[in-house]
Image (cartoon, rainbow, N blue to C red; front, top):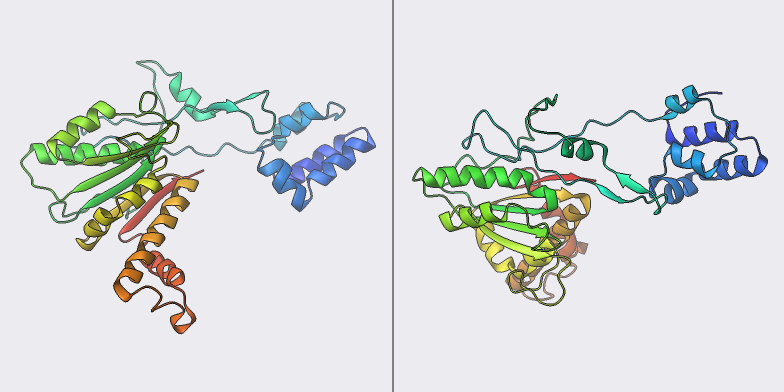
Length: 313
């Protein structure tokens, strides 16, 4: 049997090892382009899942090992500032444990996060430190450049480091430009992480925090009824525009879905500003380009300059 690490070829390898025609036909169908996307990739079906679903497959253990994809390197943002402690770093992560998409009766447990959660004081961890993207750094002139940070869940990690650094700068007597943190989580009583620290840094003037809670019923006064950070961005868009006009840098960290949601609301804000400035409908279709298309072109022009992202699946 030929072994290939390509996922679809791996399914065909299982089909080759199947001992009955029905299983062969089913696996060959799953390996096709359309079925693979909907039934395998989106549901994160593994080779082991397929073996459990089709016990008639006679696959040698060595062949099973050869079909397993190599583990990807896990990357985490350092969530502390060297101004706090130059010889110490912290990591922020969410332990993944949820029903498996392939079979909700089973649990999908994160490999790296579960390992990290199982470490005890004194354990050693082998890691390598890499520099972050050049655009994902605090401004070199924090007294003049406002900062807008947007995150949800463990995407807060780099911004905890940002705000911790600003707090140290404020404590040393520096007068910094405003910083606003938009943070989304499920419930203020469950996963509003680093709340005490952020409250303390907010009292110092290092940051202003705007929250959104996705699992709170009814209107929450603190979140202004917003379930997601992109909703809160829209509510506070006038202030955002003022900060942008002062030269603010914007940072986004979180899931790919968060990144797309924030992009959409930023484009909406840009369209609204242009229409307000030019008059409703006056620029519609000018030169065959809609306001939305112009806003998207503007958005692409600011990426990695004044708008930096760190998104993950």
